[in-house]
Image (cartoon, rainbow, N blue to C red; front, side):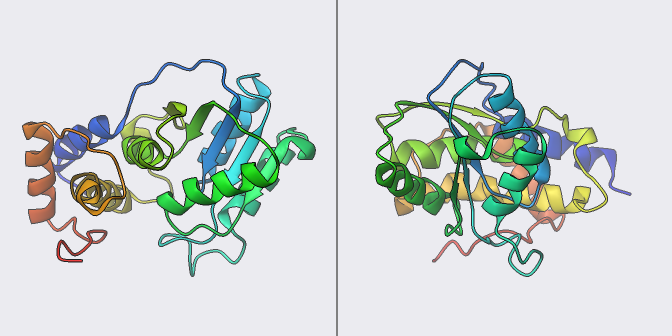
Amino acid sequence: MIAQETLALAQVVWDYHQMNHLLKKADCILVLGSHDERVAKRGAELFLEGWAPVLVFSGGLGRLTEGMWTETEADKFAKIAMKMGVPGDVILIENRSTNTGENVLFTQQLLQHKNLDPTTFIVVQKPYMERRSYATFKKHWPDKELIVTSPQIPFDEYPTGEISIEKVINIMVGDLQRIKLYPLRGFQIYQEIPADVWHAYEQLVLLGFNKQLVSENQ
């Protein structure tokens, strides 16, 4: 069992990662690959509700799915969407990317190849990757209008049998570190991190939630 004090710290980090954007109609829904199939379902639901006419799934095998799946994230997600009733002819698949930056860059290439130039996007990711997805997208595609969303699940209901609470905390702690470091490396735009959020991060690292951290010297 994880202590309530630890869960409270994790909630602070979880809340920071959420952008709380309001949905509005767009030219394209871009679903970023991950180990969580609920992201695919969220993207499919948005398409079926009529928020955009094109649905792109982006993702090869990344740091969380390599060795866990043999099928790429994008292909797996596209199958989920079609089972939910999304027509195959509105789905585009980018299945080479291995990180968020490549998700954006390879999707750019795919859309150019299809002679498509959307100006507005709804980007779908895990709840605790909303902010990093936003910061990465705006770095590589600054002229596009962007709304970020995710499965509408609160922190205390998010873990599953396959995605443990420990794994969730480790990943979102790692993502917060990347939000701090990656603008300096040219991977993302800057995002302000409030003092209470960074304090929660530091406490969680001290508690051992450091499994997804990157080297600060890389």
